[in-house]
Length: 247
View 1 (tube, rainbow, N blue to C red):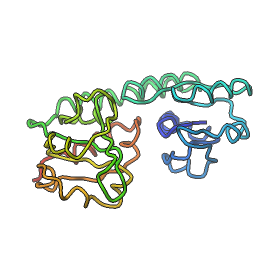
View 2 (cartoon, rainbow, N blue to C red):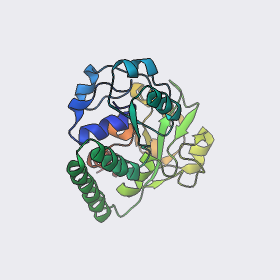
View 3 (cartoon, rainbow, N blue to C red):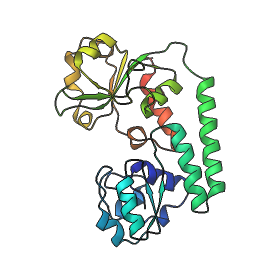
């Protein structure tokens, strides 16, 4: 059982989706998980629902300490896999792979990721666009902005793709920012990965920054961008295409 979208993707990458008996409410990949029982959100797993499905192993994140303890009391084994970065993805692949007898598959997937990263490093663009990655904002507006800071998944992808994160010097992984900070950052590209971005990018049109003037505000909602994923090649391709200069 997987309690995060990233954990569900780890299991899928290991070719073990058929072993899943349940997933968290927000897991969407692979498509087969849509038919599985849902056992709560990342921050609020449903302990009763988990126990009722009688899993033999539950993949938990580092915020699930209380749930992991309760599952241990119920005789259910857990494996902790915090997944916030590319290194975490690699670690989780090996940890889960070894636990479920898919160690060779984990090695192969990890090797493919390393090859993707090396290829990206060899083909970075000559000019480095300044990019803002927005993780969350209010519906129909630019209040409550949360962005990708240093050591976040999007920050890593931007670096690999040859871009500069305008919030690389922020003190936290996901800083809350204001429109004034966006103005000071002068991003060349804004990637709106928020749920609100699915409804449109119109709220950005009044912000006086290069990204808006050049019509380079882009809404993106692919699952492998929202949360760390073994699908690094897909994520890098999407980011690279989004930040590439217009022809």
